Image (cartoon, rainbow, N blue to C red; front, side):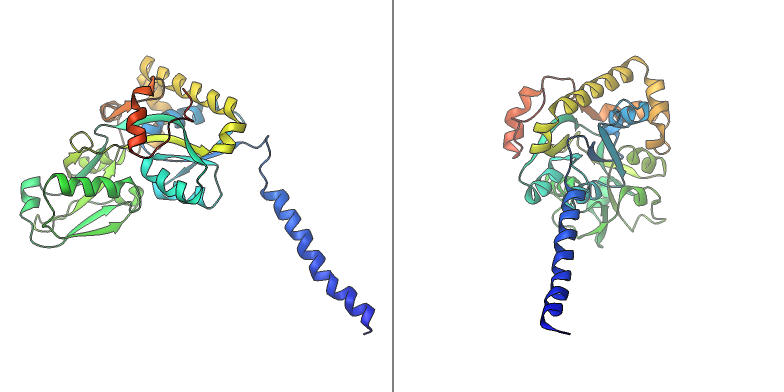
Length: 303
């Protein structure tokens, strides 16, 4: 092989690499016409999103990916598979560490009882436990903060706990241990909380009596929010429309979102909503100071 031929052969891999890189950029670049991709997990406070999806109101502008946990939702964003997610301030902190352009776009709700701590024993019996107590939760989510606040506020620091990572879909299949001597804790939220209580678990604390802000919002990349403001505003209007449907005909709303509620009955669904304070249609400016105190910038929120 002469020198000229060798030079030409050496160019082939380099050219192929450049072409491949260009193709990858073309494929990965998000066009203005692409739908906004948002991941959502099964939480009672996201039922207006599920209602919009089932009614087809989002059209081609939004795509929702239903996931099994808050952590999975956050990881999809970090991997670039979504443009944002429905989550709490805890997932925002993690997402913001990866992308500092992540901002809250729409406030959805805050939990005032729908997140809870369940056990197979009452609080007094739990305090007397001498053996290690397994705590089942979605680690690296707001569940960890809720558990830490519970331990501190209820003076349980002397007890020995062992955290066990488990998503809610797996947790909901658990049953209370046969013996009370084997105490366990479950950090859960609706609609899973209702089903676990129906299986015999006891609710010993919740966001109703623990001083922890558990706020849910739609978080998006700031550049995407700026470029698709009208679409996101339309989404917010549809969320308000879904809440109006819930107020006007709770049974129809329930039947529409029933596939996302596990085994909750209509009565249980409506009861679980008492643990939610909706912020979608409210003038949430009164929350701005609280948001800033929790490291969440309110300036990009759509009012």
